[in-house]
Length: 266
Image (cartoon, rainbow, N blue to C red; front, side, top):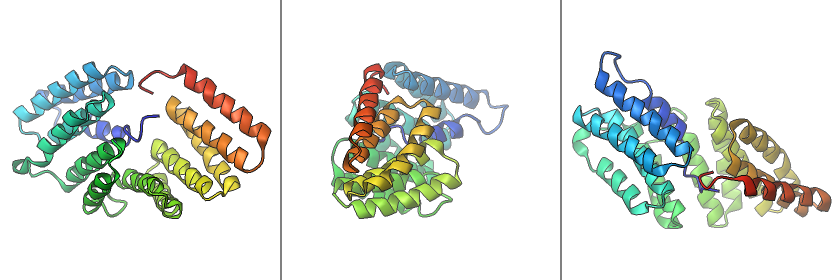
């Protein structure tokens, strides 16, 4: 399962999909390239996605469209990360964060900082991930911030990485409330899965089952194969811990079956 790479992608796509003023053909063209990039990314065609995002960014730079520059720089970083090009992903974000003349809205600075945190988390550099998560949170402290639920999910994941399951449980609960309020289906599932994993770490196996059941239903509805595999694997682990050997075996077999059918990008 890709480690949190796809988080808050849909919000960025939505922001990019409607240029400010239908009369501006250049911005409409950039938004179209952005949508094509997202479609290519979902298909696992990272080279094509990168080409589309670069073209969208080039257009936005040519008209100094700050919002588009931010969105496409962040999406470019995401595509580079999925392609295993972390250095180029950092470069795209550093260029954005260093462009003081753009006068970016705080929400996009927060989003870029969050993407830096996700990059470091994916690289296993947890101390750096924590630093950038804190920097993002400085500009994203309440539910008004579009990335708040994603940020809290990341903080929960980082808490699990440092073996603080109780903190992870609390953070995932906060994230769940924010994501439910926004009806953010994918992020709701992430919060539920994190809650369940924290419960398993604390040997509260029965408590993990209901969140995983809901997460599985959401992930199936969204067609997220990698997440479905994770849900099933955690269900197997929770049932095993609860002493339900037959159910544990069933879920592990289902997870293995899903895994065999996954595309590399999923």
